[in-house]
Length: 300
Image (cartoon, rainbow, N blue to C red; front, side, top):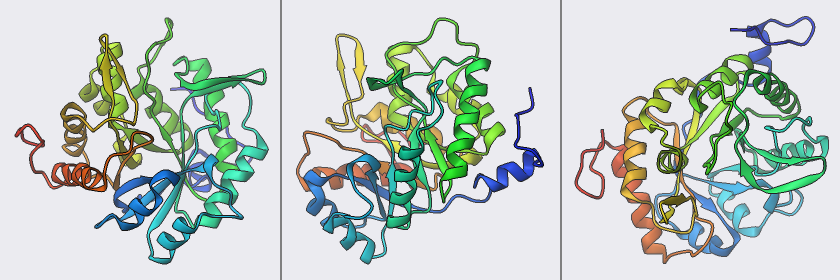
């Protein structure tokens, strides 16, 4: 493997330590995505260990009262970015990085997360999280983008695998291989979305178990679980439908390999009654406890 380019006077080991990539991940437990539409529902959800908030939806100087209530209770709040665009050729925007850093500081967060995705080029926004070309040239560019982000953030960074409906024709690496090399070069942590692994299984024929085997799960920060729906043979990762049993099966596959530091349920639209959210959280807990998936199958 080609050695990563380092800043003058550093080694691979010292660079990794300096960019917050070493050490055991903080234990988070079972969490729920905080959204303004269900802020009081999240506040009242029993047994909740932590929450995640979309970083671009809040201002560090004017935190929503609901988040302040949760922080006062001692819950961990993690900012999850959607617009940094580390997968593009352009270097990370200093203003976006500064805002993400300020948000992490205001929340007292132990880490921040973003997507490994292409979102803009030449000032034009894609309006979607698009897959990056998994070439070695792209890997070199993205690794430098990640190092720039790590240098500007006060806490560790974790990157999320995305759901895709297309793949670049000249990919040299699988997503798992690409992420593994990125972790080795930068020390970045991983946010593994098992719903996205299921999406890529349906849409692209990617085997989730094989991808999990390729990932450096010792770098795992936490896990996302979300619902979606099948339309004309294409799986849509909507975050607006109940979590399906195949997604929980992928979670069980992951749990057979590692004990995840945290698992979070995402819901962004068509919010169900609080009891339904609680039932989905309980289903996640059963998988984590080595129980059974909703169809009666063993959670391996």
